[in-house]
Length: 484
Ligand code: ADP
Ligand code: MG
Image (cartoon, rainbow, N blue to C red; front, side, top):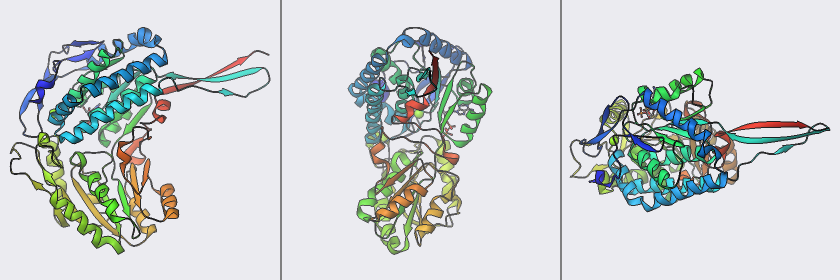
């Protein structure tokens, strides 16, 4: 099956432009979430491999990569994007098998990765400093320079998209990168590194060390040679990352998930909203940081919205990734256990509808029926905690003030949307909603490589994506010249 699509040995690390055996010689099992079968082995990198990778990154900065001009860096990234497109079908099958994503969703990730490479390839030579008027006899200007070695610790839910936004922006600004993909899904990270090599990325500019979080991940976080860490994952690990990075006092970007709401008002175009209301909850089986897990609906349209959402839920089909249905399996037995735990805690709630398993869904797969809960109180744990599964709660509200209070009433603040025809209301809420992105009469805007993204509160801090990420991945230097 899809492992035949690999053109490299996945049990190796990619360090200094070459495939190498992990120093401790250990591997981890690779499992297919669609049926639970063992499909191979990946490297279990340790602190020794992280050390080698950081040294290779430092050498790249001191060598060819550090000397490369911004336009040439951009060309390498653009060529990488081109190779991603040429390998699209293969990459999509690999990701579908590794993560359990329905093929179409895996292909959307491939396209996003290619777009990130095009965008950051084109942006590499457009970041610059400025001049600052100052005292008589001075000329003052600023330089935007790379941090140096950047560490990237990423999760299993959208490997390609997160590599694109994080590694893409770091390389565009001239940093070197050490990437620690998630132990559950690291094949496309390795594939990406090899495509970048083929595109002409100098050795050491990007190194990939698969391994466990508390081994390779922890070693990367607190490595004294690392100058910036970007992390996407759980709140608990985010705290550890920030604490680890504090040892060397390096900046961190944390993207930790959310409990994002969509607000549907009486004057909304319900039929236009409907696909966004449901898809934003069940895409990637709900294992999405920006999943819209709370749907807030004004009383006047509550029954209508609920009935229409329920009809869509009942039609959702759940099954193996390669069958390309609406919803695939969760990533692991552990994740299924977490989501089942939430479903048990929701036993007191009204279930408006559930999706259906296809008859052929294999027993060993980590499947959960998409579940829509209705009439949920905003303080219920299912309306407060991130579930990371295909579960949405519908919460009624009376007026704008109440909608805002409920929307802002969790510890998170990542994304929100407003469905309403009232322009003044859209503007008010766009300012007042606690979120790094607010969508008006849409949700997610089709991924939006160009759109800065990030959160506040438990959703983390820092902004990735778009041009804004280039500021985060560079350091500003002020040069003051006195010439009299
Ligand atoms: P999940 O619980 O959904 O798997 P995590 O936040 O644990 O999400 O994982 C996200 C990434 O963080 C993965 O690459 C994982 O290996 C890594 N990770 C986990 N624990 C640590 C840690 N203590 N230090 C550094 N990285 C870690
Ligand atoms: Mg896997």
